[in-house]
Length: 129
Image 1 (cartoon, rainbow, N blue to C red):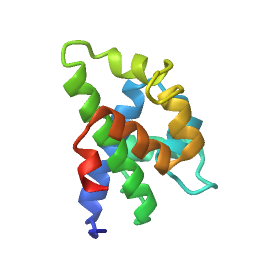
Image 2: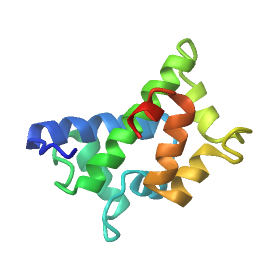
Image 3: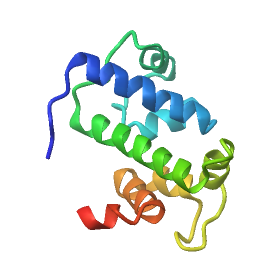
Image 4: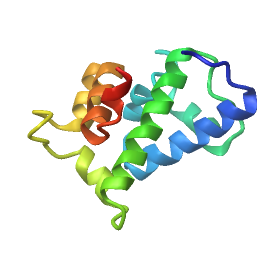
Protein backbone atom coordinates (compact mmCIF):
# COMPACT_ATOMS: atom_id res chain seq x y z
CA UNK A 1 0.00 0.00 0.00
CA UNK A 2 1.65 3.20 -1.22
CA UNK A 3 0.52 6.44 0.33
CA UNK A 4 1.39 9.72 -1.34
CA UNK A 5 3.54 11.82 1.00
CA UNK A 6 3.56 15.61 0.99
CA UNK A 7 6.76 17.57 0.36
CA UNK A 8 7.01 18.27 4.10
CA UNK A 9 6.61 14.59 4.95
CA UNK A 10 9.23 13.58 2.39
CA UNK A 11 11.58 16.27 3.71
CA UNK A 12 11.14 15.03 7.29
CA UNK A 13 11.56 11.39 6.24
CA UNK A 14 14.75 12.29 4.36
CA UNK A 15 16.21 14.11 7.35
CA UNK A 16 15.42 11.19 9.67
CA UNK A 17 16.85 8.60 7.29
CA UNK A 18 20.02 10.59 6.64
CA UNK A 19 20.55 11.08 10.36
CA UNK A 20 20.32 7.32 10.84
CA UNK A 21 22.73 6.59 7.99
CA UNK A 22 25.16 9.07 9.54
CA UNK A 23 24.78 7.29 12.92
CA UNK A 24 25.61 4.04 11.16
CA UNK A 25 28.81 5.71 9.90
CA UNK A 26 28.30 4.68 6.29
CA UNK A 27 30.18 5.94 3.26
CA UNK A 28 28.14 8.27 1.04
CA UNK A 29 28.07 5.68 -1.75
CA UNK A 30 26.54 3.15 0.64
CA UNK A 31 24.06 5.76 1.85
CA UNK A 32 22.93 6.32 -1.74
CA UNK A 33 22.48 2.59 -2.24
CA UNK A 34 20.53 2.04 0.98
CA UNK A 35 18.25 4.95 0.13
CA UNK A 36 17.54 3.48 -3.31
CA UNK A 37 18.48 6.75 -4.98
CA UNK A 38 18.48 6.99 -8.78
CA UNK A 39 21.79 5.94 -10.37
CA UNK A 40 22.82 9.45 -11.39
CA UNK A 41 22.52 10.85 -7.85
CA UNK A 42 25.81 12.30 -6.63
CA UNK A 43 26.93 11.76 -3.02
CA UNK A 44 27.08 15.54 -2.47
CA UNK A 45 23.32 15.70 -3.08
CA UNK A 46 22.72 13.84 0.19
CA UNK A 47 23.39 17.02 2.15
CA UNK A 48 20.17 18.50 0.70
CA UNK A 49 18.14 15.72 2.29
CA UNK A 50 20.21 15.78 5.49
CA UNK A 51 19.66 19.53 5.92
CA UNK A 52 16.00 19.44 4.95
CA UNK A 53 16.39 21.79 2.01
CA UNK A 54 15.03 19.24 -0.49
CA UNK A 55 12.32 16.60 -0.06
CA UNK A 56 13.08 13.03 -1.02
CA UNK A 57 12.10 12.20 -4.60
CA UNK A 58 8.47 11.12 -5.14
CA UNK A 59 9.84 7.75 -6.22
CA UNK A 60 8.00 4.99 -4.26
CA UNK A 61 11.20 2.91 -4.10
CA UNK A 62 13.14 5.71 -2.40
CA UNK A 63 10.33 6.14 0.13
CA UNK A 64 10.23 2.38 0.70
CA UNK A 65 14.00 2.27 1.28
CA UNK A 66 13.81 5.21 3.71
CA UNK A 67 11.05 3.50 5.67
CA UNK A 68 13.15 0.35 5.91
CA UNK A 69 16.08 2.39 7.25
CA UNK A 70 13.82 3.88 9.92
CA UNK A 71 12.33 0.48 10.80
CA UNK A 72 15.70 -1.22 11.07
CA UNK A 73 17.02 1.57 13.29
CA UNK A 74 13.95 1.46 15.52
CA UNK A 75 14.38 -2.30 15.91
CA UNK A 76 18.07 -1.91 16.71
CA UNK A 77 17.24 0.65 19.40
CA UNK A 78 14.71 -1.74 20.94
CA UNK A 79 17.32 -4.50 21.05
CA UNK A 80 20.18 -2.23 22.19
CA UNK A 81 18.47 0.54 24.17
CA UNK A 82 21.47 1.58 26.24
CA UNK A 83 24.27 1.63 23.69
CA UNK A 84 23.98 4.02 20.75
CA UNK A 85 27.08 2.51 19.11
CA UNK A 86 25.60 -0.98 18.81
CA UNK A 87 23.44 -0.39 15.71
CA UNK A 88 26.50 0.49 13.63
CA UNK A 89 28.48 -2.37 15.17
CA UNK A 90 25.69 -4.93 14.64
CA UNK A 91 25.22 -3.93 11.00
CA UNK A 92 28.91 -4.33 10.20
CA UNK A 93 29.60 -7.70 11.83
CA UNK A 94 28.68 -11.21 10.80
CA UNK A 95 25.32 -12.51 11.97
CA UNK A 96 24.93 -16.29 12.26
CA UNK A 97 21.20 -16.34 11.56
CA UNK A 98 21.52 -14.12 8.47
CA UNK A 99 24.66 -16.01 7.42
CA UNK A 100 26.44 -12.82 6.56
CA UNK A 101 27.08 -9.22 7.45
CA UNK A 102 23.76 -7.33 7.62
CA UNK A 103 25.09 -4.21 5.87
CA UNK A 104 26.53 -6.27 3.02
CA UNK A 105 23.25 -8.18 2.71
CA UNK A 106 21.34 -4.91 2.41
CA UNK A 107 23.79 -3.45 -0.11
CA UNK A 108 23.97 -6.62 -2.22
CA UNK A 109 20.28 -7.54 -2.19
CA UNK A 110 18.63 -4.12 -2.07
CA UNK A 111 15.14 -3.90 -0.65
CA UNK A 112 14.81 -7.68 -0.28
CA UNK A 113 18.01 -7.73 1.81
CA UNK A 114 16.76 -4.80 3.87
CA UNK A 115 13.51 -6.69 4.47
CA UNK A 116 15.46 -9.78 5.47
CA UNK A 117 17.53 -7.82 8.00
CA UNK A 118 14.47 -6.04 9.38
CA UNK A 119 12.61 -9.36 9.79
CA UNK A 120 15.59 -10.75 11.70
CA UNK A 121 15.46 -7.79 14.09
CA UNK A 122 11.68 -7.46 14.43
CA UNK A 123 9.51 -10.58 14.44
CA UNK A 124 6.38 -8.48 13.82
CA UNK A 125 7.66 -7.82 10.29
CA UNK A 126 6.93 -11.47 9.53
CA UNK A 127 3.28 -10.85 10.34
CA UNK A 128 2.93 -8.38 7.45
CA UNK A 129 4.49 -10.56 4.71
